[in-house]
Amino acid sequence: MTQRSPADVYREREARFAASRDALARRSRLLSHGRLVAFAALIVLGLLVERSPTGLLVAATIVSALAFIVLVVAHRRTRARARWYGRLAELNAGGLDRLARRWERLPIRTSTRSIERHAYAADLDIFGRASISQILGPVSTPYGCATLDAWLLERSVPDDVPPRQAAVRDLADMVDFRDELALHAHGARAIGLEPLERFLRWAESDDSPAVRPWLRVVAWMLPILTWATVIAHVTGITSRALWLLPAAMSFGIYLTIAARARRMFAAAFGSEPLFAAYPEMIDVVARFEFVAPLLHSLRARLLDPRTDATTRLRELRRLMHLADFRLSSIHPIVFLLTLWDVHVLIALERWRREAGRAVREWIRILGEIEAVAALATLAHDQPGWCFPEIAPMPAPVFIARALGHPLIADDVRVHNDVEVGPPGTFLLITGSNMSGKSTLLRAIGVNAVLAQAGAPVCAALLRMPPLEVYTAIRVQDSLERGVSYFMAELERLKQIIDTAHAVHSSHHATLLFLLDEILHGTNTAERRIAATRVIRHLVDTGAIGAATTHDLALAESPTLASAARLVHFREEIVEVDGESTMRFDYLLRDGIATSTNALALMRIVGLPE
Image (cartoon, rainbow, N blue to C red; front, top):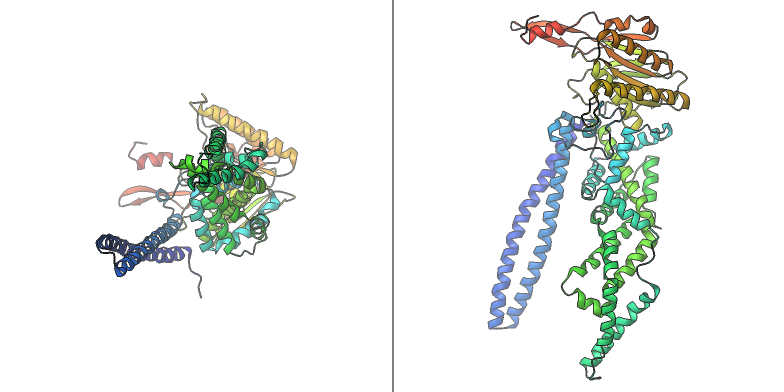
């Protein structure tokens, strides 16, 4: 049997879920009509009973009422299931969009942290349109997004990568699990990281109790006294309205505790998606078994019977509904008779005392599982990609076979064998405009980032040491900071050089620098001197990297000649239907480029040479 392609899987699932959605939609319409008929029958029978209340009519009215209630419940459930299958169909349609790189149809996720001056996020298209975040699976919860962002924007500890890779492999084929987890997590999008953190601070706080010990006793004794005196007055046991005294005391407590209760309820219940979506996510984790040790450990901690995360979160949701009764018009009367808010506060404080400090761990675990599932979606979508080997090396070298750029569609992507390093050398890439130089830099950088996140990489093989990735590819000026393009590039280069010194001293990693036509904001002579000094300095600190240039004289510089490994891309100009056009094969070749295309491009666009 041949294994189905990811596209076939998504097409089959989309069609199946869409068919289920449509069938449930038809059933929903029938149930809606049935509700209408049952309600009309109930009205007619009610009028008949009012005129002639026979036993048969009363029984028929009761049956109609029960039928109406049953139809209402069934209709609500059917509509919910139809929406569920509709979302599943959309989710799998999104998988087809990812495979085809239809960027305009894919949601854009922004980073949970500032990336304005990040080492590589903008240059390597980690976020935004046509980015790495768009080819990964969906993440929605605040901790899921933050965890995945940390993996993509920071170098992981090397020992953390193999267990994460095993977890990604484990979830790659568990499409049902990933889809269900993603849909329930989507319901938690309404709560952002800041509101969630406010709730967690409340849950973990040791504030003085809102309900004093004496009030806990009064909360039971006073309602009993109120009811007893009310019953005594109503039954004639006493002619005096003695119930006014405990009622007045209850009213005084109401005035005293009202503001305190509002603050407590706002802190505890301002994050409703936490109670609605997270228990469902935990249930999904509970229903599936994992092989990878990392996932097995996370699941065991999440389902620890001593904490019982699902029950505790649903208990908090029930308390929220009880607290919402304060919004009712009859709440003051009920409070006077029961001290309602006091009992809810007592239960809420007990919940915080018993479960509050465990909540952060629950949502952190769910966020980590969600982040692994996002990487596993990439592994499912790209079964031909490999999982890299990341380990310290005596002579650090980035070695890739059939390396490609992950954001380019499979049917047009070109792969190349690439080696960067060892220390004391760098890759100098030459070639004409649009030949593929910058794309190669990004392919090296993006795959290094994916590798250290624990994801598969767009290559047949990749071996690399732990790397600190720094790029100068898409440097931009800043009107807000009053920084010109040239100054912005100098700032970036200084950042790279400073990091190279720090990394060289720490011995924990190797700096990988990727420089694209640096310092072209100044004149040719000075640019050549400055670029030579920058690259030589980086090489001398033990960094490895690659640089592109149009300045062929840079390759002949005595300062760099001993360190530069020369590679290039080539193009050809052909005549098609009597017009000149340029073709690129994007294949990396040894040596220095021997041609340029600027004048040819002028001719192609109709300008005189």
